[in-house]
Image (tube, rainbow, N blue to C red; front, side):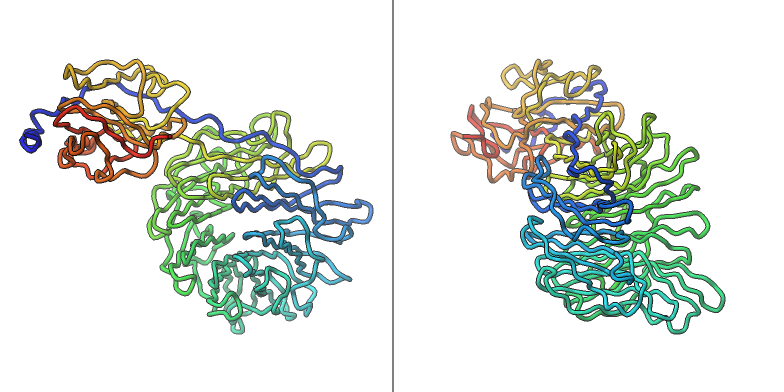
Amino acid sequence: MIHALRNCMAVMLPLVISLLTASPLLADGPWATAQSIDVDNEDSTMPAVAVEGSDVLAVWIESTDNSTGTFSIQSNRSADGGETWEGTTLVSNDSLYYCTDLRMAMSGANAVAVWYDVVEGMARIRCSYSSDKGATWSSPVSIDDAATNSAGEPDVAIDGSNVLATWKESDGSGNVQIVANRSSDGGATWEGSQSIDFDYGEVDYHHAEHPNAVIQGQNAVVGWKTSFRESGVYYHQVYANSSDDGGETWDGAQLLSSGTESYAPKIAMAGSTVVAIWNDNGGNTSIYSNRSSDGGETWSGVHRLDNGAVGGKYSPAIDVSDSGVVAVWTQYNGMASVAWSNCSDDGGTSWGTAKAIDTSVSTDMYEPQVALSGSTAVALWYHNDGTDQRVYSSYSTDGGSTWEDSQRVQGDVAIRAGWPRIAMSGSRAVAVWQQFDTDADIYTNYFEEPKGVALTLKAGNNMVSVPVEADDMSPSALFGEDAVVREWNPVTHEYSTPATIVPKNGYSVTVPSDKSLWIPGEPVIGWTTSLSQGWNLIGSTHGEATPLTNLNETPADAINTDTVYWWNPSTGQYEVASQIEEGKAHWVVASEACSLTVGSPPA
């Protein structure tokens, strides 16, 4: 009988009801309350932040005596994802002279901070390390070779106990090169700096700058921008060098960019995937990328990320998580430079369509930053919102394909913000920035990935489920006032209008145009329901799909898994299902009344 039902599916499956449109809903703002982590009355600037699980570490530069022009490096840490902070700790001594370019990285319990300051009249690259998540710090040491009096723009990366530091440094003959140093014990000892730049002996002039370091295991990569003059022609190009032994030896610098006006490179790494991004000012300003799938040993070629529109495109930033990549930059739209983005789900091999993150902003947006973890991306920037210059954010739950409305990260009275930075681990992102109150102070806020489900509705008929428990489960609250929602009654064989949406049930929805919905709520990871003999329209669970082989019904074999179907709104046809997928409704036929369990209901 069951197989006969399958053969007659087109006749016997209940008809899909044509409904009206549903308006998308956005989650409540996911940012908490901003707080100061710089507790004294001195001016502070240039914060950096790292997140490792629930451990958060922030560092910054602080003025210690304006009359003598001295500074210190300070830190603060949190063990609960940025919700509470322990108090400031001195990283350096408090009499640094002309300190700038602070960078910091953390992996496990190990953290390393690097910066530029002047020691006995010499410009030096200095370093301090911590082996207890920033509770204590070592005395600063110089990690350059002190051969010249011109070094700056350091960067640092860490993975476990492997540390890579890089910076620009004069070679003593008027040229500036990129150098690197490595530590295999978390920053306690350093092996000695070495040039990793290309052989520029044939050019008239060479100036390298803006190095970025990344490291994963023994794979280390540094990217940078070089300006040089050859035969009277000036070039500005992006280069990278890689190492497969943690920075002990280097393969040789490679040209990443294809133009002659390339600037502001940024580089990110996940596993052996490395992605570089930069802006090119040759002709119409553009954003480009290049990628490597073998730890920087070889590169695949240049890919354009912007939409080709006329207007300046600057300040690129990038992050990589597994195979996902998200890039952000500012782009002039005729009125203001606003934040744009593009994303890739295959490690930068191919990219989607560039789009503005927030089309409602009509003032210049500055210093866009991005952090990516799994499919959640968080963008950060600052702009003048009509009250003052303040920090804002937007987030994406689909890897950067779509972005939610932006939210102010600062408090209502916050003014004159700058230098926003963000880091992310798991579902927690933490932002830091400089904010002027009576003094320039360091503030922070944390973002918790919103709980909910994303639903994509195609124009026309859709069969959906809502596998979350929202505050209001009424159809109008979930789908909008204009939506007409129908549920199937397996006893009367009729559709009716539900008063409440239930996660274990499926529903019929039709919209006149494609819609992306975000429904906030507590995820439902399993449920048990009673089925009637014949066709039943069931819902789904949150998260991973449930294979049909994992369904549990009582009595056993009351459901034939060959007769489970879902409605494909793109083709307008039913298709055989092999699993119960999040957000989809599924038709199942029971040979007799039974109890069905999908997923793992709470005990």
